[in-house]
Length: 282
Image 1: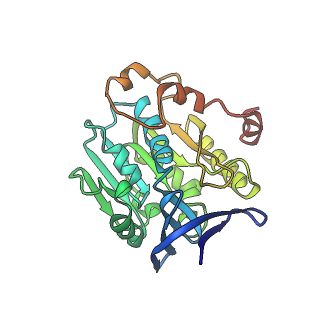
Image 2 (image 1 turned 180 degrees about the vertical axis):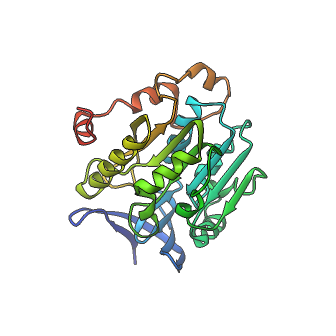
Image 3 (image 1 turned 30 degrees about the horizontal axis):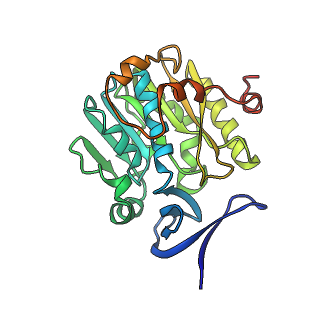
């Protein structure tokens, strides 16, 4: 008998993967967490029935959420990752030797435990001595912190359940306060394609633009996410993602990447017209 995992991406669209084995299933205090071993995408983590990370394409997401900001400001020393319990964002940030401190705040310890047990490809750097893991609400963690972090990465789920508060104006204001003078905020910015995702994308962009003097969106392509076309937000107090980007300086660091490169960095900010219209840049 064949076993399939099916995600309902919209009321009218479903995405399925053929499964070898259901490896992990637990309902935490916050959400349902499952891990499947699939034929095409390797091990897959799903939260509340939505794909969060797969072994096959995780590198796209994790490289684009980290290296764009790090290439703009290689002077980054202190990083806060909110969410990202699978560990992939921490893995990419920790590849930079100049980073001195990485705080990861994940509300659900079940996600981290499951990733450590079943997804070493992403969780492999959580034991780095520069990394401190806090099991608490990122919304509360960032409150009251001033001028601490050079980079804040919001590696969140969609704005439902535990991730809902990470899309509020109050949260973005607290992030602004917690950042240093040239600090950068990168946030999971949803998709422009399906209506329910596009609404949240527009709302997030509007809030961030009211708070940060520099606020741009950039795109990446994830085969396992609804429509495959997704965005991150780049916001900063003083650094522009293109004007302050020095590709030669980043290339001298010598990191090998599978997706990100200097040409892609510039091209990621060249958005389609329909996306520009949605976020008020037409």
